[in-house]
Length: 558
Image 1 (tube, one colour):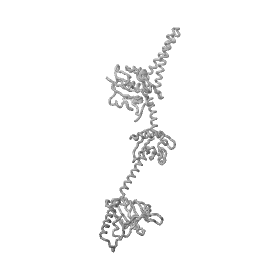
Image 2 (cartoon, rainbow, N blue to C red):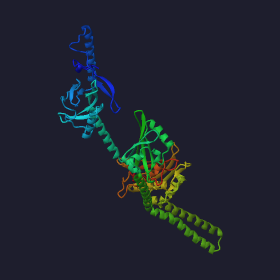
Image 3 (cartoon, rainbow, N blue to C red):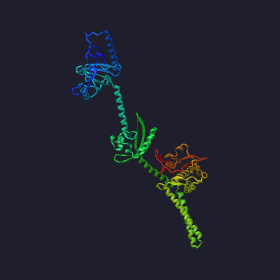
Image 4 (cartoon, helix red, strand yellow):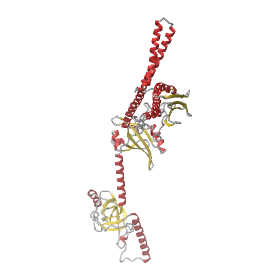
């Protein structure tokens, strides 16, 4: 390819060829040959003009190629000093001339001494080189990065005469690479310091990358984890479950589930896993975030124990309020037993008919059973052991509570009316817990009506079946009603209208009803008072005990 520097020099444009070195290696070289141009040579004018025009066209093509492909064209002599530099017109500011200096004599910031040593070895060996990168200082204190490539040039005798090559300014590329490396480093730092275990999987579950927490939680190094599959450490995951989750992920969903992870030392711990799929190029990848929930599980277990304690305390407190009523319910059959026993002894001693004696003894048995039932109910209500699930006749359970509370109602001058619908569907659940709810609502009504004139104190308990065949229970009183300001917070923990109340009774009741698939709410009674209602669905309860605390386990109130 012609070059403007050769015009009038006596040389034709260099040809690139391969020559064999003494050591047998072949290297590309540039060869120059003398032209036939001479002062004595006489060429026909018509023949020389087309040659000059062709030379100009070739020079323009070469210049265009350099302008659009590279930022600088350079040449050096046999001592590696620059003898020619042509800069692209596209450069905003051409660098200072380096003519007469070697590449390493011009001030530089990069590379280091070792890289320069290797580069000079290449030049002294007259070998081609490509993309040698260096950084020059700029006037504003910055760096200007250049990537240079060159080929050795030899004359027609094979003598080395220097290098010719090109350079590209790569400052913008370098800054972009540094920014990318910085971004990647920040992201890696962020991921490595995350409290969750991050794992990157391919489509078949093979681990491609992990963060530090994943290594710490499983006890493996990063190199040990990469290449494993999710099935190697996740005890509840297998190819079938993985495939099922993948189908959900492909639809754009997020898979969230609890599982168990196996450490390298054999320890097992519970985790909550969240998985999501995304595309990177033509490859589909799955990111998995795992959180150790050991402490959460322990807290939940402690919470359940606390719930049981609080539920038991609430039942015991209710029993304390019924002391007088229970004493009356127990004393009635005991008194009847005593009277019947004395009568039977009298009839047997007077040789009277045995019929009266038999009736008296039968009464003793009946009253003894009744006293035993009262004591069994008290024992079931206050014992801490979990109650068995039963198919409950709601009306029967309510009547048992009413019998226990009858004396308390009479003592406070409250008239009781029951309106219990027959043939209600039976409810699967905990009988004692449901009786606890009814008892709490009755005692709350008794206390609410304490400020109402006697004769106006009325309590009505009713049952019915709603349109979904669930049982509806309502407890109506004629007290002052519920303050609208606290109506929405009535079932929240520690919210109470009683001067000495703890604010847990109604929250316990609400949680018990919710665990049985129903809900508890309050409305205004007409013409006065409040009506507390709850529904019960014919399905097993969710938990036992059935009271929840905290955010997911709301603490109880009354």
